[in-house]
Length: 296
Image 1: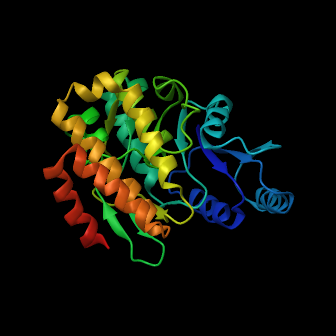
Image 2: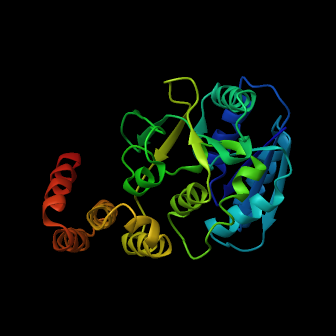
């Protein structure tokens, strides 16, 4: 049995798209959707209730009377999970039909090879679609130093909706840090790997899900502050890869914040983050600045 954990807030049309992708899965095992509505307006909640009623899926709807924020919603979902296996999906993103089938095949292969599947997450390649742009494939490379690659965020990225694992495997990372209004996934992945967890890839090069991306309305300062919280929390692990790597990781965080600022019309804010990056590591910042300009 598979529990699919979905947080939702004021986006019923996005939710309907996500649920349709769950219903279209080629894996036909027993599955239950655990849906946490995080304080949506009465009008949007009414739409969600109708979607749940009309859906062919088995859906348990948990209603929060007020908006708790993404980390608390995810902790509530983890607590509500009962199945042996768990997967995540954010309202507004989609799975391709063969996602869970490929991931279950991978889990069972590792089990038959003698691995402890309670320490394994199966990720996958995915499509990344910016609003108004074409989809592009993003590869999840799980073959390297996973802790280092998660900090760098170039070869291996921390997105829950790529994952399938046992319920026990998700307890390795403990709870979502409720201080993190953003970037909870990154902190959760880092905690998992530091606790002895391992991320593996399914036996296909095809993308198995799609992330619909927009920076609009996202607070650059909030995101940069969340990076600082994560760097402080995982300070020893970050420094374990050398001070130069730690500086480059902070530079990249500055450029991520600059991107959010620029895409929300905050030109001076974006410039401030870039200047901070040059102060931290001028050479690496120059490399990142070139990519920043090319991406427009």
